[in-house]
Image (cartoon, rainbow over all chains, first blue to last red; front, top):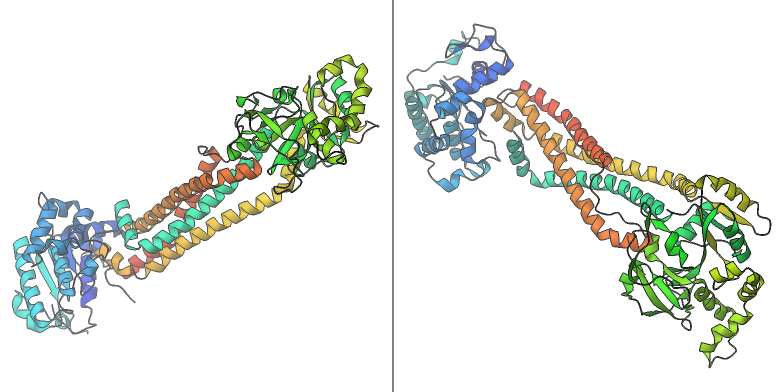
Length: 193
Length: 440
């Protein structure tokens, strides 16, 4: 999904993630009516079914990279169950596939990682436990051109592997060819923006 | 959740450490003030136990109590030996022990008394005085001395050691009675009361010191002969002769000084104490006061009560400051942690969960403060106990926690949790409003 800044892309993501109130039957994610859920149920639904990658600052700075990846498993039984027998091992594999194989790096506090590394850790966190949907809110905007393409390629591949749908928001249309489908948010919104 | 909070605090360990320190200081202060107060009261009450009435030259009852039982300050001019005998002969009196004061041994009060002192005085809930080594004042040797446990420990005294006393109560005195040495006959077992800091000599020995002092040195080349020579001229001896016809008394008191400073009295029936007190106060020949130790203590606590309350108030004020410090610390970091909360929300943490994260952090800080405070208090007790016991004859002791201390800790802990509700509530509202994106 692409669109200019300030057109409401992030708000749509918040609505899908169940953070803002929406009316019932407006949003369906994995057969869950997000608008019909109450506060606590929405929080549970979010972690059970959705992985989220932000633009920047994705990680809890005082946890290690590995612990950051495992966060969804501590909050969701479903994610934990789907993360395999040893979630730590699954997390390591994910990080390895995303190009973070250095074990010394994984045990460092997340605040010591570079931005590119942080984004890849965030991608691993979104992917662990195979959620139904991954929301990526301009995760590449802090990366340079080469890293951008590499990151999106890796993310798309891992989503296929995990069987997760990926909703990738960006204003950068050069990334369009990585995706099956692209939506112009302005058009989607009926040209209201 | 607790592990999570711990990690989060560890990330801010410097500020968290300072917060814990502030809380721990307040805990140590609050409990310390209470213990000091209890220690003082116990030690005073223990010191005065076994005595039903203290009779001394007319004066303020608190002053009399302090001077006689604790060796702090002095009483008025002495009471006569006649008064002592009058007291001793009263039908309601079980025992009476004369006390002479005014000298010190290297800063520790010297008490002139009789052997029965050790028989009658009680400490710490009715225990009699016991010896660690040697014998009590045997009665015959005028130069015998019994020293308290602390005096013995401080100067490494053992039976057989020769000591010299000084006139006055100060620690530094140039007026040494070095021509009238005493030989230590016994060392008392520790009592935890003022007795530990006292040196006991016989009435005769006490008088011998002053006999020398009052008399001009007739023959400086022969100091050894002086005590006996002097004694013949001394008024005390006249008194002794005056009562020579009382055969019983004669046998009982090998030496009768002219004046004594106080008398400890034990009654046969304690209900007669007020009657005897009145009789003493009305005695015409001698201006005397009869002091009930318990009443005088109550009076003393009445005087110190204001200071106690002020100290307690201050201690609680410090606790309040510690709590405020914690709330400030938790609140100040909230803005920088908004991102953190948004991330936690994105991985499924409910606002309630984030609320409880803050409360858990406060609980950890407060609990750590309580524990560190107790450690500080224990260390401080270890360090100050010898000083307090040397200066004031009181022991704090490493006693286990009483119910009141537990209640205090409980109150502080809950106050900490309660205080954390403010920042936690702010976080709750903030995370609800922020959602996944942080609004700046």
